Length: 183
Image 1 (cartoon, rainbow, N blue to C red):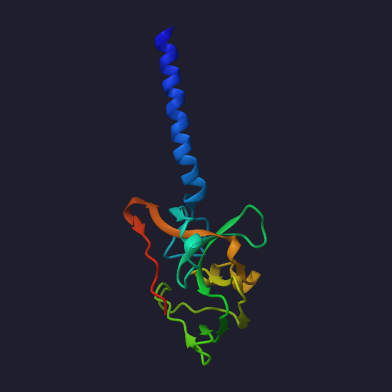
Image 2: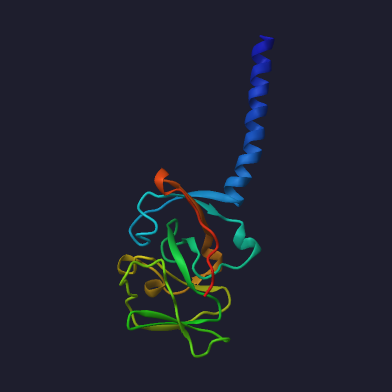
């Protein structure tokens, strides 16, 4: 009977220690995410398994080009994966298939270079919108099939869960995503 009691005590101790380590990591540092839909093709495909870094944006602001997981601005409990295009205090203009960014440092604007888009992909729409503090403009990489800031407006920072950090599935596509060079 003593061996069973010792075994159970050791088992309970191991489970408690594991939970004390795993739970904070899962809820405050990283979390898993499965890609659903076509909005980020060809860079992220349906059922890609990602690890989302939740801590980076507590230490710094999101940067242009980063792929983020966000809370849906319109449907509670739903999450999207999109790419950050516009930053706070910038103006984004979509016209004639291109994205142009205006900022305090570049009032004439600059066409956004988007090497992650497929050849010939254009950004449909005709809009000009300015972000305030803690607002971002996000788009999917598959612009024709993306439900994004062109439809539901600006994203507030508090709705950004984290950035795509690692793709673990499928095995042939395992990737660690670096913070992109800003342009």
